[in-house]
Length: 215
Image (cartoon, rainbow, N blue to C red; front, side):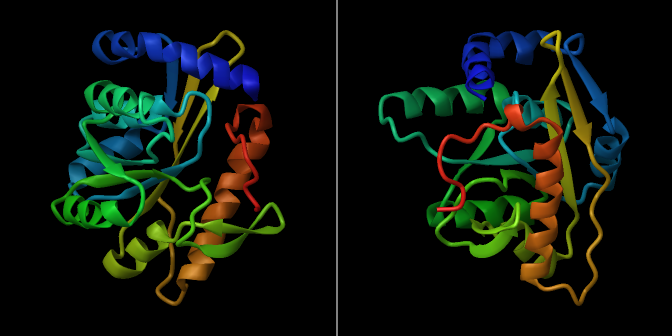
């Protein structure tokens, strides 16, 4: 995992090249048709994923595909590095950035209601979430996707990226998940955790997590 982390950090030096010159030769995309369908329908969706290797390229590709997108991010604890990282993300990864937490909730609703799709990582520990099973243990989990399903009847689209042996990537856009009207927030959140688990198990060493998810 630390090797994966190091590769991601080093690739921030080339993020401008990825954005401006494209990285089509380095990335294989499965499910591009799903993005084209979302763009054609002009209905905002919620993209979910986790911190996989290289997770920044997911939002970049979705936005470059012509989808109006806003990404939720967690500010860095380092007050010196955070402004630098925010600038990199807004300039080269996804122009619309929403700060994680209560302060970003208004922006989240504003963007979504105006037709902007939302991308967020559901593998982060949150204080305002619910305890949902994750690898057999209770873990505080965000309910934002589930709340949007209940309120707006929107689609949830999982996205996964993995690094291949030759340092190229494979990006997969899954088909939208279907939820019935009688499924509550707890049930929807549990389903999304199950989807995330399958992504992690595929390449455990490519899941970036450096502290206790189940604390």
